[in-house]
Length: 48
Image (cartoon, rainbow, N blue to C red; front, side):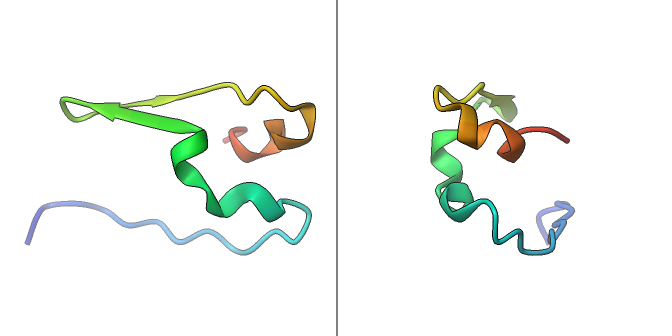
């Protein structure tokens, strides 16, 4: 109804912090900014 595409990614057990999506993305006026995590162990979360 909203015209959105939902993409479900497979679970990655090596990324236990991956459930906290608000830590790596910010949205404003329909634009999503993918942020670079401060901890090296979380960088894999934002690699697309």
